[in-house]
Image 1 (cartoon, rainbow, N blue to C red):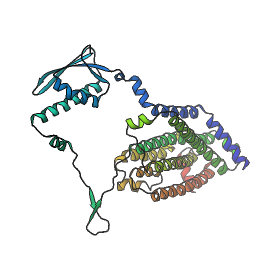
Image 2: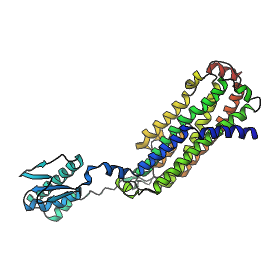
Image 3: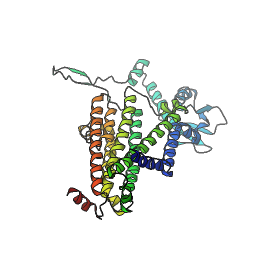
Image 4: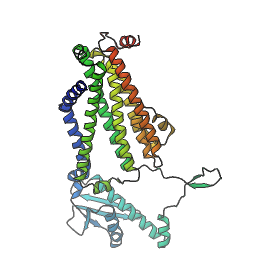
Length: 400
């Protein structure tokens, strides 16, 4: 056990002191601080903060309708009687046609808001010419009520209200962040652990190492050290994100982007964290197993291709399946161990997804991790002193 901890500590502390670990962690945390203060950054560079003084050359009846309409679209545009920086002139009323003269260009957003206000005012003018009553006008703008019904599961021939599967934007953001973070860390640490193992074997340092510690024990120490480093990085990023959230006024940001929590939000946070950690453990275990086949650094990228391809496929399924999270293809791939950490949390974006599929996915991953670690230890023990130059030759040698 002492030899295991010695190797574990050596690998663990060398990795957390590495500049790549420190810089990557700080960059991601800084990115979260920026994300939580995005509205303030946008306002900092937004020229619309200064009010636009707009003169309107039109009759009083037009102003009576146009002024409150414009205010509902853009409250930073102020209508003044004189000395405005822009002038809106009504060229014609039948049909309504306008012209705006400006001292300097205004933003596209303000141009759109003025256009929308003019469209709404024109609509009001047209309705007035039709001599419609207020009740008739309000009836025109009313939303048509529609009841969406689905056939009852009891087979009685009746219908019941369909479930509302509209995707929550906040849950989607949490899912996106967890998938992207997991993919980045997998690609980074998978390469590191395979490089560590292959480098020792190619430099023949392993001959001295295995004389004092069992090969399987040495491999497991390295694997668990790398897992601990990756989990520590996730914990630090999570803590940094919580600090960024606590010290940032996110109320306006959440309102601006329509981010609201629902009854699935806490569930998706917990399961995303679990699957990110399990995904890292699984892919690092596979990387260690593949690194055991490699005796030359030139074969490293070739040996890691399965990890790269599997993680990329899972990553693209997760991001591409966002709009059809309840599709049968998503359900099937969520039970494939190497895609589970990417795809299973995606199913939580559907509101009626319960805990059972998540627990099944966790069990599948744990079993796969145990099998992978046992297989990695077996392969490493059989190939640790191999001098074969090719991956396929090492595979054949292990099978003997």
